[in-house]
Image (cartoon, rainbow, N blue to C red; front, side, top):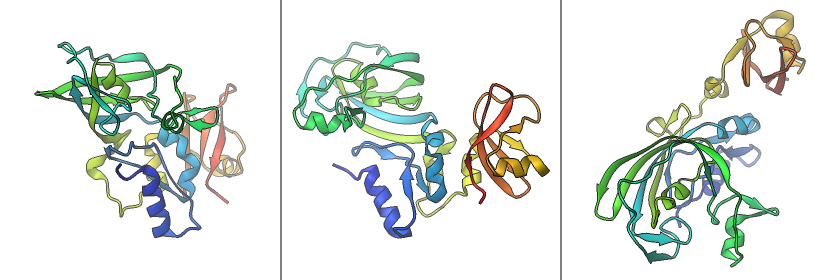
Length: 255
């Protein structure tokens, strides 16, 4: 088993001091490599916005074999090589998460139940796959690039090819964040990190009201989703649009 996302968070917490909150924006399987967004301090309050970002992966499938966990860490058994060309679904699809996953069942993680020998069958969920492209094929291996919505299980996409499991997995992007720019020693200011959200600039009384959590009028066309509220001093809050056309601050950063 490789290093876990929890291990990374614990290491960062030790390095920065135990009084500081540390979290992450999406678990990586222990066998996987690649990008993990670590959230520090007040960034942990906006975790859900980072977790909702789409992801990009590079995956290598081993064909003609199955795994109890959908990856190389499970019990392997020979099977039949999936027919080609492979069926690579894109768009909105329904997917069943693997039994060995972090999905909670009755308050417990599915993987804990599976490891205890309990039968686990999780409900299907709707996910979106924007790209599922075959990039290499050699022997019993096939490589893919997959761009998908948050909550998509690449192991399930690979298993759905037929008798196949995910032999290698690397997360190369989370929204605008690319693994090529990753630096474990760099802390990105929260205002910059949230740059993927539209900005609404306020001044005067509106800025003051927003800093106290009071809804403010929308200066222009009403946004469809969450926005950053900014003034001359930087980030005031994140806000959600309301039916009456105002913006209601939901997470404040002043005071």
